[in-house]
Amino acid sequence: MPCDVVLGGQWGDEGKGKVVDYLAAGARAVVRCQGGANAGHTLVEGDERLALHLVPSGVRHRGCLVVLGSGMVIDPVALLDEIGALDKAGLDVRRRVRVSSAAHVVLPAHRLQDRVEEMRRGAASVGTTGRGIGPAYADKSARTGLQIGVFLLPEPELRSALERALEAKRAVLRPESDLDVAAMVDEIVACRDRIAPLLADTGVLLHDLLDAGHDVILEGAQGVLLDLDHGSYPYVTSSSCTTAGALAGSGLPPQCVRRVYGVVKAYATRVGNGPFPTELEDATGARLREVGREFGTTTGRPRRCGWFDAVAARHAARICGFTELVLTKLDVLDDFETLRIAEAYELDGERIDRYPIDARTQARCQPVWTEIEGWRSSTRACRRAGDLPVAARRYLERLAACTGIRVGHVSVGPDRDSTIPVP
Ligand code: GDP
Image (tube, rainbow, N blue to C red):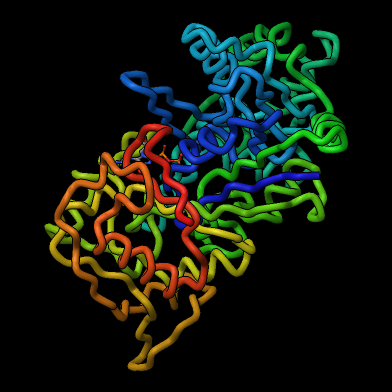
């Protein structure tokens, strides 16, 4: 039963979408397991750029089912918009999308709640994407949420379930905002006939595919360092970004996992607030942002940039059992004279090798650097590991030594064919 898991090994935006697209060539299904439209993948092929928010990245392979698993929270209006745009691009997605009836609904009121709660937090704001993801998961955990299977009910029952849920939100959102519940209900009910045919018991579907010998890819969103349990709480996302989270969000057992790919950039970025020990708030950080085009797919926000953090990567690898790293955006480092990797931290005058579990301690850590000479030449045209400059290969070796995980693939450009296996 071969199932591969692809996870972000840092704070998200590592290029998972592109890696899944590359790996999905032989897969029968790609599954998004957690998160919602707060994720954004960009796929590039020639001049074509596809921005995905809810639909998983196997979408370009026409034989591949694209599954939205039970661990997700889904804004039905946003989902229909995205499917419409993909179909317009000729991808014939409507036929291939399966949405777990157990996934939860993100209501327009959740989006408002997200913004209102961020405002109320003031200086302690998390830096959320404002897409309503956190409030939708909060309602799910409080058992007051709506599973998307509610769209299978007759219209009057759907209508009253929505009215109840939105009236409850109305109370929460006062005084900052007064909801027009009737208009919101009408907007969502209007989606019913287009959402209902997409719904399925995706757990059963995936088990059946694996039993029949098909390959399935589980696609994580965000990154392990933003995980609700193992990240820098409260500066985290509201779901589980680990291997365990991918299994929980798809309904598959651990025995079916073959490989766990940890996708990491050759440097580090973080969006939103929270500790980031290797952050560079100087000209080098600005240069990484500019060369790496580090602005969010979903929000357009500038990403915070820094050098690769091997301490944090070891933490992610240990929790998730990465079998290999996929190192993306190596080309962004092409022109730097000297590169750095944080191989350890210094905390209160002592060297530590473990990533502290709490955000306050993480914020007090200073990186202990190891310096590596840059290669000062373009890697963009490299298509085999042997084409890489010697200094770039040395960088990969050092990174593997610092993290304890082998680099199995390296990526030197946004296109699918610039992903290179490393023997
Ligand atoms: P994801 O959410 O993890 O898939 O990441 P995003 O899509 O938000 O960000 C990754 C960005 O980097 C996208 O714009 C990709 O096209 C781009 N990208 C991915 N791999 C590479 C690479 O190896 N080199 C360069 N220059 N860009 C890349």
